Image 1 (tube, rainbow, N blue to C red):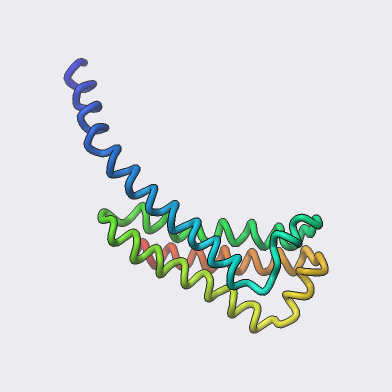
Image 2: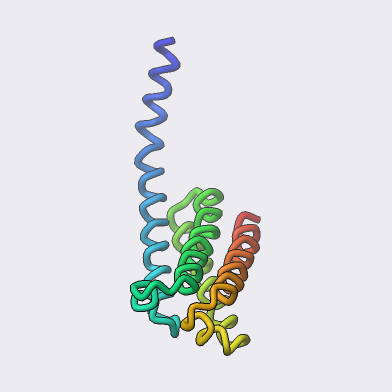
Length: 141
């Protein structure tokens, strides 16, 4: 029993620093992705959320989940920090591109979301999450 506990501690000692490094890098990518999204979106999320706009909350919530999904796949399938950073950055770019294409294709989405149209916000969030799942599947190979 002592031997297996010692092996667990040894494994923890070697694996935990790597886990924390990879998880930390992924968190940095995630927050950079959220900041980039807030920076490129034509919506003013802080103001819309502060005014109680539910549609903006749905979109932002969907975006946060959509950014996290492919990052999680990258984290789960990559063994090297460089892989996580490179593929994570690509995943974030694809997600931001999805949002920009959706806003461009459906030009009336922005005013509908700003007006609090939860159906429009849910549709956009659903699209972002669907692309995130496909993105994650492609990244997981």
